[in-house]
Image (cartoon, rainbow, N blue to C red; front, side, top):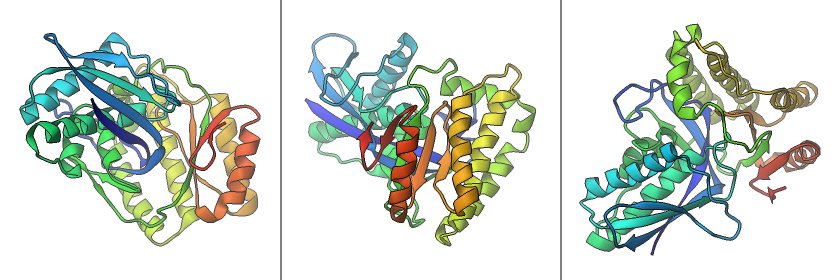
Length: 319
């Protein structure tokens, strides 16, 4: 049996919109923070037969995703792509599970495809003795799931074109919390969202806006300007969600409960002049990043949000 495990990541400058026919190359660069407490584990078992198979992985503390036929085909197709790239033969049963809900805006696609790529790389090393660099893994994983290419680097990853790379922006020990508004499967998948946002009148200028925010955010983080970093992260996720809501066939991930959480965070900032970085992915859930010295504030805010919502935190686990 071969094992692979990879973390999720949360983008602060978003990957939304891709160049058609390029294997998920993005229309704009993205910046993410790696979340080592939210992981996918993949096991590979060699089997007799003429095709690869997927099955849920039974592992304590983990839950198998509910893969649709399309999702299963995409996952198996990525494994076949990796086998061809590395000249690997044989067929395998691929078992996978996450320690967090899938398909609800917690970037399970990123960790799942990165973990599969990592497991295939271990298989390659076992069969051929050849090790695969994180940079090569990133490029190959991107072809299965764009955001997965950032999961091979920590704590920060910058993705501009073929694959991601590590970037030093300080803050190596941020505290992460996810406020789970809904753990259900999204009505509009991230893949579909990438296509539909291009029909929004706001998509014109999106690439320039994202690139400018990337420059501004990297500068703010390097200069330890936390309040400016918060403003830029907030502007960025609102910009992305406005693309969803103004596409030719509008769709929406934000809910009243999502807004209640982000508004509560803004209230903290207004009254204290400090607070967490706040962002949302393509889903209803809200992600918070606290500095290590904000632990007391983080505990208080999570206790408040736990009254209504499930939370995942890097320092307290699932509550």
